[in-house]
Image 1: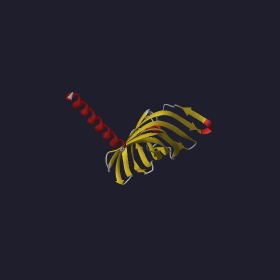
Image 2: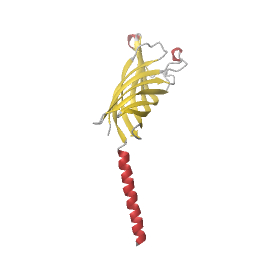
Image 3: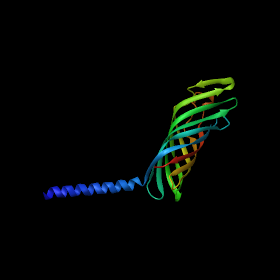
Image 4: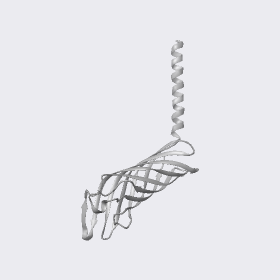
Length: 193
């Protein structure tokens, strides 16, 4: 009988400890929807002007302590570039993994890699000619992003980022593909739960 009580007491303590830790962790783990705008171009490709697009998805954030955190996202991101007589639309499913260094209260410096998988491309050229899924673009891309984020006390988050491709966005077999990388500015708002 005393053995049953000891086991029951240990189980109760483990449940209480587990619930306490889970409660403490809940205060540090946040997630939610995110939406924003992209302004993008392709470097060294002769496409000289920037193109606007949107991003939408979800994020998860973990705050380790008062100074460090980690945020990962899954976003549908519309990118591309404008050129004389047309434009290029390149849509990606992106996975940014951002380290967060809190500078002052809820203001953080964010930096980290972003993996992108191309899901769609379309080239619009003069006189209404459209080329969909042109095979001119690489299927994967890796970017490095840096920016600032702010977490409002009422639940909203905001970030501003700059990203530069580490891999070519256009295949090297195309004349303009040599060393052509995506470049983007991104402004996003989200809501954390």
